[in-house]
Every structure is written in C-alpha cells, then in structure tokens.
Length: 92
Image 1: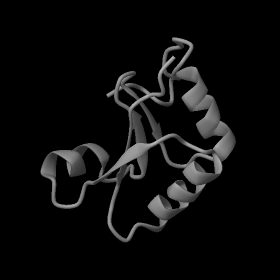
Image 2: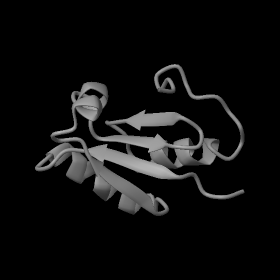
Image 3: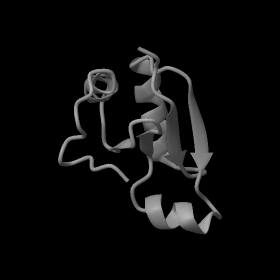
C-alpha cells in the first residue's frame, strides 16, 4: 500500500508548528509538503485558528494539533486500512 500524500498546513513563526514538525520527525512521518497559509485568504479561512493541521490528501482526513507521536502513527496507520476518520477529525 503506498504512503499517503501529506500536507502540513502551517504559519510562519508558529511555535506550535515547530512542535508539530518535531513530533512528525519523532514519528518518522514520510515525505510531506509544507503549505504556509499566511496571505492566502481561502487557506486562512479554513485553517487559520487550527494550524498546524496535517492532511492526508488522498483520504481527505485531517489531524489537527495537538497530537503526539503515538496518535500521529495511529492516524497514519489508519490510512492504510480503510477506516473512516474519527468523529473528532472530520474530513474537509
């Protein structure tokens, strides 16, 4: 099963985003794209108060901060078994 295509939505100078990056490194997250929402009206409307948010593009699932390495690994592993997103992480 291929790895999910991941995007991390974040802001410039965001200490929570820096923490999320550290958690992602500890969890050995596969390659992902960083998208900075600053100055993008649609992205700021969608993610402005929720960043950092990790999105599984193919599955349409999102994992919003806060998360630790264990929760993140579980979320990534769920991408491969066809489980629906949990109630606290609705698709966008």
